[in-house]
Image (cartoon, rainbow, N blue to C red; front, side, top):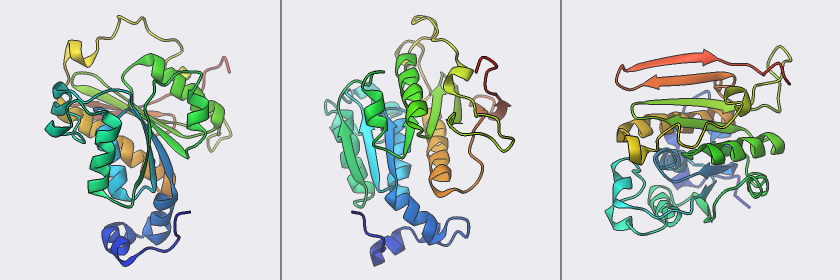
Amino acid sequence: MTSMIFTDEELERYARHIVLPELGGAGQQKLKHARVLVIGAGGLGAPVLAYLAAAGIGTLGIIDDDLVSLSNLQRQIIHDTASVGVTKGESAKMAIGRINPHASVELHSFHLTAENAPALVRRYDLVIDGSDNFETRYAVADACAAEKKPLVHAAVGRFDGSVTVLKPFETDDKGKPNPSYRDLFPEQPPPDLIPSCAQAGILGALTGVIGTLQAMEAIKLITGIGKPLIGRLLLYDALGARFDTIRYARSERD
């Protein structure tokens, strides 16, 4: 069991958090005892894992069955040249150990499906989706909704990205059910409609912006500070240096 008492080293490590009145020692304790599952240790997962490890998340679960390739390194900053050919989970675990030895890492080296997602999601307090395909996104979102786990979802294109928070198992301040992922995307698009980053390309720093926003939303959810992006989709246009937010609601079909 994780100790409730911070060591002197931890107090110094998290000092800039602890002096924040909105977060403080109580918030840092929440981070220390949190269990967060990150789907993918790629472009989005890399900054998510780095910042959550640095923030003091107690347990980070990583699910990724891929190997680090040279073409990943332009954006997946948790990996380095020496990690090429190593599983992304193992590479990320080694990097996290260098960032913060207090963070525990649990690796899940299998392909996530609609069948195995619920049992995995059930083991964590919060889930962050850094996947790059709709099949996984729907499986994760449906499992989180069924298991009543908050989900921080994001997606990126060549020069743009989006972030939202999903808690469809709760209601808003007016008593209306929060929207789900299927309220944003009722049906999966055809497989060939949206090209992969290998086909279309992607600006590496873009994934850092969006992944860092995901980490920020996760910290807010765990500590209870701020207003998470529930029912709001944050859009980022990298070339225009512009952020926009659109609201979305629960479908009338529900």
